[in-house]
Amino acid sequence: MKTALDIIFIIICVVLTVIVLMQEGKSAGLTGTINGMADTYWGKNKGRSMEGALEKATKILAFLFIVLAAVLVSKFI
Image: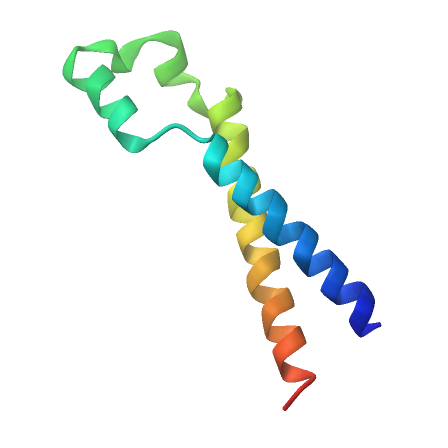
């Protein structure tokens, strides 16, 4: 069981790293806001875009990362 959890934990770590690196920086959005582009289609529908999907995936994987880390550590105590 521990080996399976370790493998899942490593996969989550790698996928989380890749997803975070795929996201745009916050400064990219700031430039659009300053120029008045916040009211464009992509600004209004960010949750439906690829960036929104990446943010949701990041939140879910971060939660799983924390839960699995706690489970794996508690096995050693």
